[in-house]
Amino acid sequence: MQRTSQNQAAPLVGYNTVRSDAALVGAVRAFAGDDADAVLKSLGPVGRLAGSAEAREHGMLANQNEPVLRPVDRYGNRVDEVEFHPSWHWMMKKGTGFGLHATPWVSDEPKPHLRRAAAYIAWTHNEPGHGCPLTMTYAAVPALRADDAQAKQWTGLLASTSYDFGLRNPAEKTGILAGMGMTEKQGGSDVRTNVTTATPTDVDGEYVLHGHKWFTSAPMNDLFLVLAQAPGGLTCFVVPRVLPDGTRNPLQVVRLKDKLGNRSNASSELEFAGTWAVRLGDEGRGVRTIIEMVASTRLDCVLGSSALMRRSVAEATWHASQRSAFGALLSQQPAMQNVLADLAVESEAATLLALRMAASVESPDDEHEKALRRIALPIAKFWVCKRTPFHVAEALEVLGGNGYVEESGMPLLFRESPLNSIWEGSGNVNALDVLRALQREPEALDAWLTEVGTVRGDRRLDAAVTDVLEDLADLQDVEFRARRIAGRMAAILQASLLIRYSDDAVADAFVASRIRGDWAGTFGTLPRGVDAARIVERATPTV
Image (tube, rainbow, N blue to C red; front, side, top):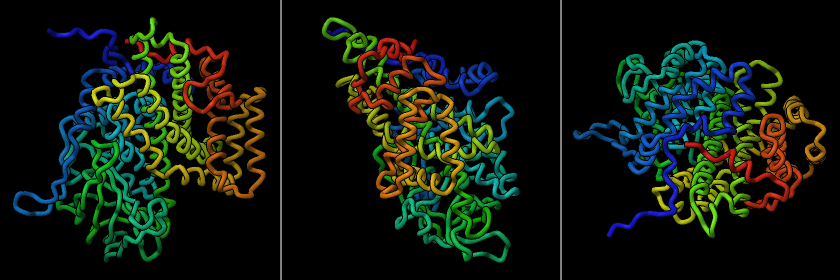
């Protein structure tokens, strides 16, 4: 006898991940100004496909069928290739087709970087792994601008919306992808200890590399920006996988990393043994050159974490709106309402901060925006990415045992949730970078004060700003307090954005809990007086 399932939520498919996300739509309207309608219209195809059963299935399959390293061909010739499941290629084709990589740098669409950021949040939660090569390709362009010739040679191909997989002469391809090689065994984030060497050849600007990179994702990408020690010090180089004459650049993929999450994405160790490279920027200026790429990848870490939060909120609120317990829907139970509202508030705060940073990229030469990016990017990278694992775990618990099984998709999100806090600088690296900006660049603090000062008059927020300034006035053991300072500055910045641009119920709940401190730290401990029902309704997807 076949049993009919009862009191089970339907799968969350067949919805628009843009249109059904009030926080995302509100953030686009806040920062796109007169272009908001055009930007939102352009996001329609992304949202429709991202919320489809097809996209969900491809995302699951890409993670279940991991990439495989093929170091040699059938005859024993070294090829160093990685094979991917067709679902990976489907996700990559769609992602590049939507322009989620380098397209904004050449686009004449209104607010292209803001549009891309919103699309990144709406799309990548189905399969976060393929977001890595999209991110690195996006981030490579501002670094390549250190050399006009290099930028001219590569930008058009990097920005192409054509996904052209395979190791061939880049000049013969319709689109290419970029990667980054910084990390070495002995240094990790301390790249100045790198020992990979770069020896000049007889041709000006060309070098030969010898050494090892401990962590390089997407080794099948066409182009890599790499740090190595040249005669003049640590320098940035452009390293193609295939040389201009069509032969393979001498580069070995030693192995693929067996990672906690991000399973679909091939992360590798690379061995350089006479690898040909072209210098990017001056010798000894490698960190300054590649820092433009790092800043952009940090932005995408914030976007990616915001995407995970939003998917988690969507799954949790959707489940609770259909599942009954103890005589009522879960979403109507007071304790559950508190949990769901708390998750929604955290997610919306992350989304607003992420899109505020993306909107800043639209004004590269504006002095306030430059100073704000300098301090707010590491603040956001530290705080939003650090909050995500806790957030996803709580959302998983809303689904109960169903959330703990792979079919729900929640374990995929949970395994992914710590990643963005580790990549592109761990929590400590980013918190200390905030202090470095505060100590060396006074305009960075001024930019933060200007931003949060737009809502002066809220006594709770004013008191929090004063608390931060008092912390900064006392430099004794300031590094010990780095995380506290960075986290407090992040929450204040998020509060100011919510007060200006979000629903009053969401802003009031955030300020009461995260700023005033009437909150136990665990999700589901919002204070009395919060309009939890309104917040939950706002966050629940409509299908």
